[in-house]
Length: 174
Image (cartoon, rainbow, N blue to C red; front, side, top):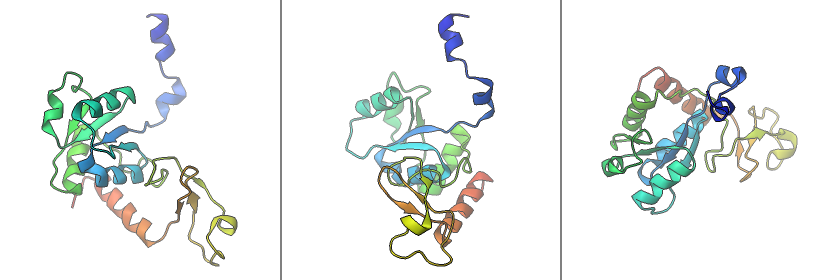
């Protein structure tokens, strides 16, 4: 084994920790990308009308898997092992395809990333971070994105989202 190979080997601690998927979603799959962020995976979006070649180059540069419905992207030289093609027939169908291709853990670290900007969220204080006066029964835990300032709490919407993530985790795509 060369020194370079030894330097890249993970430590035993890193082997025991589950790894986040690093994904890049094309424009057609942004809704699916938000669900992947909700599950805790590092998921970037192609927010602009980027050429196929530039999109694939970004995936290579950022060491991400490119998730797309565009079958032509699979024809590029750098596509094997990098591009994952999913169905474009709705979020659930695309999630099922992606789960088959990448064994997605839909309960990796739920609600640990900002759904808007992908930054890991941090614990927030209801007394100081809640807009206005904090309610007596403030939903918890309360988190805030340190990058864009978005505030998140565990209300009914989070319960419904968690139920969908749990169903997908169990292989039930509706």
